[in-house]
Image (cartoon, rainbow, N blue to C red):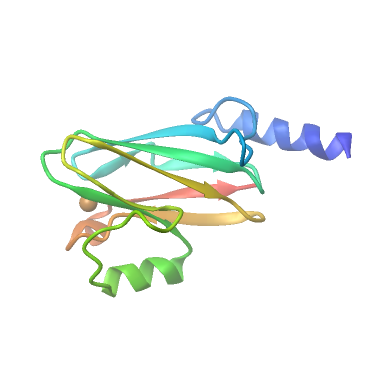
Length: 134
Ligand SMILES: [Cu+2]
């Protein structure tokens, strides 16, 4: 068990963009993602399986965006969807122009999830990133 825990710590230490201890439901790890020129910074985030992360989105653009976290199928649903506002489901939040929003998400097992903005044209333009869950 101790070996598993130290392996997870080593993995999260490799993800230089998200330093700090593994997040729990009681104490989520804070990860700040900037939005500039319709792009997420960083575009790639590493987390540990089972970890809870509080994503803080800082929008430096003069237009609103959204942060939608999930697998490819979920991204497809949102790309075709018509929801005007997000904030009720974990991992989904609207980010006002020049403002900040946050959403807390607990990751499952390993794999890769996608985060993206599905305002018209944004996802196709490339407004997306990935979360590696290890
Ligand atoms: Cu956008």
